[in-house]
Image 1 (cartoon, helix red, strand yellow):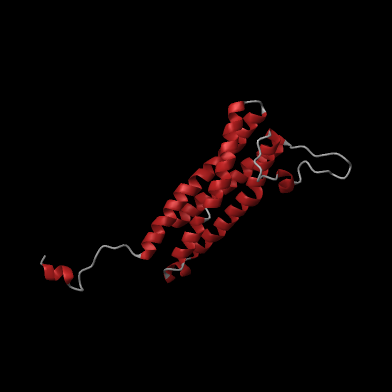
Image 2 (image 1 turned 60 degrees about the horizontal axis):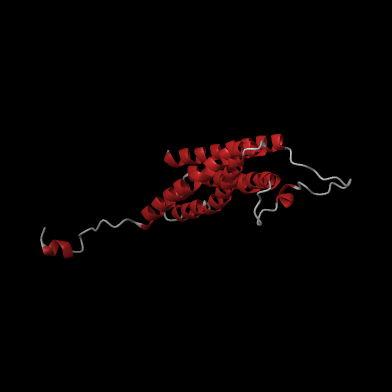
Length: 184
């Protein structure tokens, strides 16, 4: 190769395209943010149940898993933002139904996380006495509010942990399906 070849307009430099960069960031964000929140969601109810039964170490674990669920759940919103950026960089993505299905399943998964899982976790954390200031469990599920007859409702640990297991399983399954759709 001569100097003229390097300076010629036909010389192609190996600089990644913007869509490749967005794709890499999208995958990395999914791994870094969705992995931990999925694990935290699946482990929380077991640790919370152990904490309720008197295990002090489990109380700290449950609090940490709840913080991971909230924090990483919020940060995982970067995944669809980057995905939408990638979606609009190439018209081929607009015509592929698997990407539309993935977007729909992602919206459902985040709905489950933000409206069903996190509020129930807040209720259990409040019942354990370790809720943070930004947690308002009573507003989340009307737990601990006056029922009109002058009595307060209490937390049904069995039902709440079963629902958390169910919603956590659905949340994880939806992300598994999205991952498969992205690979095929």
